[in-house]
Image (cartoon, rainbow over all chains, first blue to last red; front, side):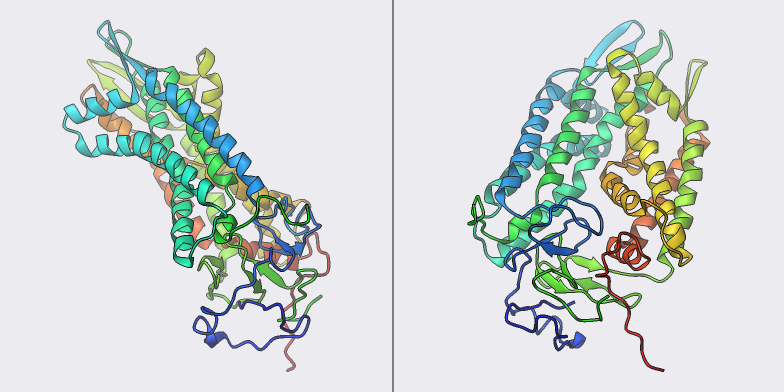
Length: 234
Length: 227
């Protein structure tokens, strides 16, 4: 696929040599749908005039790549961060062994694993429930703050890479919730041992879900250009 | 209908915008095995593969069978001091279903087995007629978009890692044995990974369009070469 230029032929077929890519195009100025006064569909890639609100091919809502979309990112992110607080303070699960019951928080659970010498699994749980969520909060805050601000091409590539990592890794934080669910279902041995899920499991799951929504509402196209808060036509 | 390599900068016909960076590209029909990358951000725009639709359908049907097995066969069994307790995936959900946890149990079942099964159904519905070169069924466009939206929320592979962690946590407390449902789940993870490698979203959209779904007369046709 090649990049069209504004002053090129409009409906006539342009010269196209597939072997010229990428040497020919890497340095050529790139025309974006936004600069051409068009709207690209984020779901299927089809391009429409900017008065369209819905993509006629796939039915997705068409949104212009401007900073107004960031409001949703912030809203979901803050909700996710609020739920992350009780997720850490309240017990994740309650273990009853021979009449004694102990509450364990996320950090407590990791410490128990480490004390037993399970460094690997302890590390996995710590990464999934502390490092990844906190790293995601920081990454999304940073992306939302720098989005639309002028940057070099290298900066943009770095930001897109971070965005892709955040988008990919978000779901993996659910591990700890699944662990609690499996333990609670499995360890039901009456007086000998029983495990009950705690309120932190719910708030942690909600925190992960809201952060996923936040990452999904971030528009990566913002990374690639400095955009004013409103379009000039407003 | 448009010919190959024609485009219109006022209506956007014949153009593709990269969903990650908004760079415009002229749409081309790729031959099988070719990969189109964005000139600006390098992201994959399209990667059609031969026989992909048939493969995806086969894998989707496999997914449905495996999900059925994963839900109803015993998942894990625990025993200690002569006390035994087995659980199926339903058991996992029901253990959470006490009072305030009930919505959580529903969400858990949905993430782990519901969504993979629903996505498999939607994919078969979308691709079945396309693989046989027939016009798509009604609402195929909506079905495929829903399937794409549900993708990040289907979490079977994460559940398997969760099971491994849970194993280690109980290891000191009691003996654990895996049931058939556990192995069905492991298979499910590999099937979904295989499915991901065959799936090219752009190709499916193009195929839906070419086959006549919600057409506005702007779809590309392959140039008919004179014999």
